Amino acid sequence: MREIKFRAWDKENTTMLFFSFNEDTSDYPIEFPDNNLSENDKYSIMQYTGLKDKNGVEIYEGDQLYNGKGYYRTAHFIISKGAWFAGTLRLTRTLANQLEIIGNTLERKER
Image (cartoon, rainbow, N blue to C red):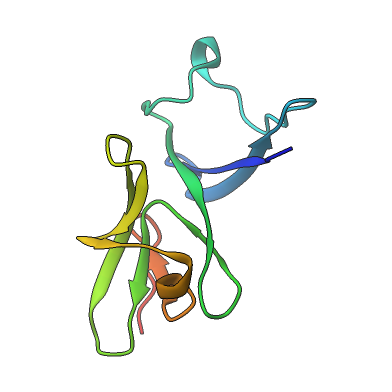
């Protein structure tokens, strides 16, 4: 059974919340209007890519990745292609293992 993980940036409290779903249970740490996970005024939702960076950290949509040469990419999912992409690069397990998360589009981390 595959667990589907998400995180939500609480815009009001500037904190990140994590939750997941599977066939048997779901954990809702926050309330969504009409159980809708789409973007709204209070939260920005990001899905786990199923991949980890070179340090074993889970890569979510919106993460900023460093490839060792100073280039930054943002992970996002293109449904029509059925693949995760970092910028314009296809984010494979091999490539993910070479990258490092340095922040995300909502929480800025200076290097």
